[in-house]
Amino acid sequence: MGLNAVSRRSLTALGCACAALVVSGATAMAAAPVTPTSTTEAGYTVASTGSTFLLKTQFTVPTHACSGQAGIQPGAYTMTATTSTGGGVLMGCSAETPGYEAVAMINGVRTVLTKVTVAPGDDINISVAVSASASTVAVIDTTKATRQSETGAGSVPTHLFVGDQAVPASGGGLLAVPNFGKLRFRTTTLNKVDFGSTTPSAVNMANSANVVQITTGKLSATGAAFVTTWVHS
Image 1 (cartoon, rainbow, N blue to C red):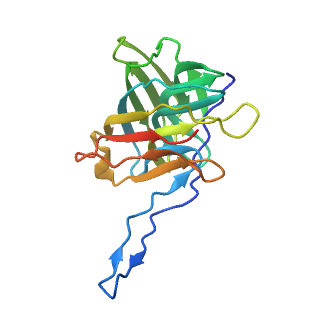
Image 2: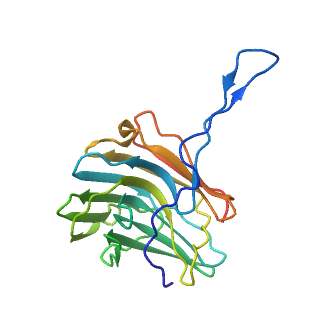
């Protein structure tokens, strides 16, 4: 499909907006926080602290419906100001035909992992280890007992992300989002502790017209799981 590396995120709103409501002179009550949107990702992001990072997540590949060129790439990534390192599964569409590829990215260089053949229903484990001197990305299909990893130079990430990333279109812009229903990320950890303990922030994906395409659910009680939900292509 001629798909290139996923671009870095570009949030259209940061933080949460809280409004005060006054009802018939009663005590003001805060409105629910507003989840910010991004044109390139939906999931959870956290600023990096420290110098070494081990980011992991698991998910089951959903079936996605296709009606034209579309794509999304769930996974785990460490991000710098200009590039990313991580792994995931490209869920793409060419016309009405769905396709799946395991992919790894080392400092923006994307590699299709041909030893891991992905299909709907497969359980996928992602492991991303990054330091200033080295990076290792592994994608494991536990259903088929296959795995492949890529190694390369290190980086100093500014933040880390787990969730769905948008896919650039070959002619510019971003591909539409295929209808994947729901996707549950689970056993998500950073440096061997539940991701929620790092106080990550949720982000929804929206297109350039600010139409929300993917929503991000709340973290589980343990902080290790959450669900993203397709809303609009």
